[in-house]
Structures are given as C-alpha cells and as structure tokens.
Image 1 (tube, rainbow over the protein chains, first blue to last red):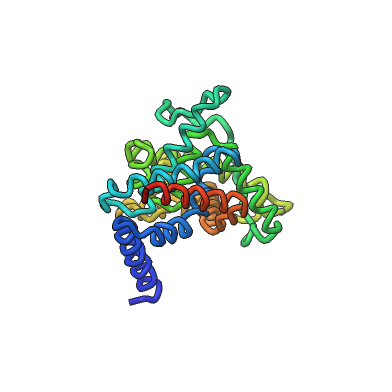
Image 2 (cartoon, rainbow over the protein chains, first blue to last red):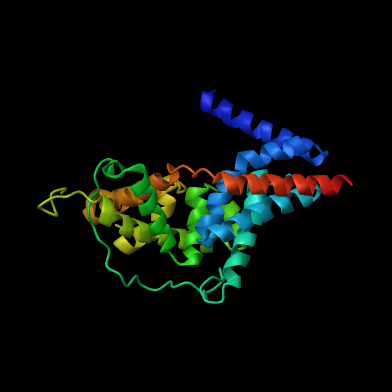
Amino acid sequence: MLDWDLAAEQAVFDETNLVTQARQGDNAAFGELTERYQRNIFRLAQNITQNREDAEDVLQETFMKAYEHLPDFEGNSKFYTWIVRIAVNEALMKLRKRKWDKTVWLDEPVNVGEETVAREIAIWEDNPEQRYSKEELADILDKAVNSLAPAYRTVFVLRDIEELSTEETAKALDLTVPAVKSRLLRARLQLRDKLTAFFKKKVEDPFAYL
Amino acid sequence: MLTCKQFLAELSDFLDEALGLEERKKLEDHINKCPNCWVIADTTRKTIEVYKCSEPVQIPTDIRSRLMKALERKMASKKL
C-alpha cells in the first residue's frame, strides 16, 4: 500500500474517532475538528459571500450549529461534507439578505444556450503561475472566481477548491448531478478564458504551437 | 469523429477521468486531430490544477480568536 493511502486512511480514522468523542461530549475533540477545518470553511465562506464580515459570521455560525446539532450527525457522510453543507446554507442566506444582489438563487435557470463570448485559444506557459508572486497569483485567482455568477461560483468552489465529489456537491447545494456538471463545466471554461489573459505564452506567431 | 461542441460537452468528465474507456478514446481521437480543442483541454486542466494547489489563507488572528471564544461560551452554556 502506498504511503499516501495509509495517510489518507489514518486521516479518516482520526476524523471518525474525533467525531465519536465529540458526540460523547468531549469538547477538546470538537475543538480539534474546528482547528482542522476552520481555514477551509473561512475560505469557502469568503468565496461565496465575497465579504469578510459575512464570512466571519458564516464561520462562527457553522461551528456553532455543528456543535449544537452534532447528535443529529449520523455519520452517513464525512464530517467535513456535513459542515460544508451547513456553511453553504449560511453563506447563501447571507447573500440573499443583500437586496442589491438579485442573482444569488442557486436554482435560477442558468444560460444553457450557445456561449456568446468567443474563446481565446492560446497556449499557456509551462509553469504560468511562476510569472507572478504568491500574492499576485492569489489576487488573480480570487478576482477570476469572484467574477463568476453565484450559481457557477458556488459549484466551482465546492468541486475544484474544496474538492468535494460531484455527488457531495449536488447534495450540499440541493442540485441534481447533471446540474452540478453543467455549471462546473461553464465555470471552468469561463475561468480558463479569464486566466488565459494572464498565463498565455508570449509568442509572435499565434500558431507557433502547431 | 466528435464535433468540437460534443467534445466540449464532455470536457469536464474527460478531465476528471470520469468517462468509460470507449468514450475517453473518442475524446482522445478528437484532441489528437483538433489543435484548438487540445489547447482548451490543456489550459482548462491547468486552470483546475492552479486552483487545487492554492492553499487556504490563514484566518486573521482576530477572527480566529473570536471564533474560539464564541465556541467556548457555547460549550460552557451547554454544561449548565
């Protein structure tokens, strides 16, 4: 067995143990779970709400609710997937409260027609991210994600940043698997277009790669 | 051979390696002959990688400490 498999198995074992202990009233175990996932939940909350204050509220509410409802957690899914679901609900509620944002309903019909924007076809540098400093790169990636419509952004964040499966994402967002897939594809293609502006190879001849 | 549109519709599953062998072969045949779709597939794969490799930022200390305090209060109130 590979080391990686062993490590992954160990992590699942640890998590199950911590959850069991926390359910039995071990507050230190719940504290450990909070330590483990707070960075991911905060990032997720920031990505969805795009607002630091809201993200902090979502972070707190998520762990408060998880603590309160721990007896209801049946262990059918991973603990992480369960708290992600709580966090997504909290974050969407925050978004909906903002009256000026009328585009936040995840069940709104999405445009499934032809793409109207011409795609830029350009090969990228081999390690395009090395062209920028860590801070610049983080800024480019954040701005690109934030420019997506919430329906696409939320799916992309869960699938490709938090690395939930298609099924877990569908469950967390109350969407069908095909809806998750079509939104993910559109999000990925839109991001690819946006990042191409930063990462494309600078060549005189645009067909040099052929 | 698949059209570019059919190729793009399957692109996500192709990159996620969620396709059966036969379907995968069809997509591979397409990109071997279509340089534009090859570029789109390659740069979309890199898009996903660059996001997957991005580390979650550290939570600002003030936010972290408010979270821990709120949690401690919650735990204390449950004990009573």
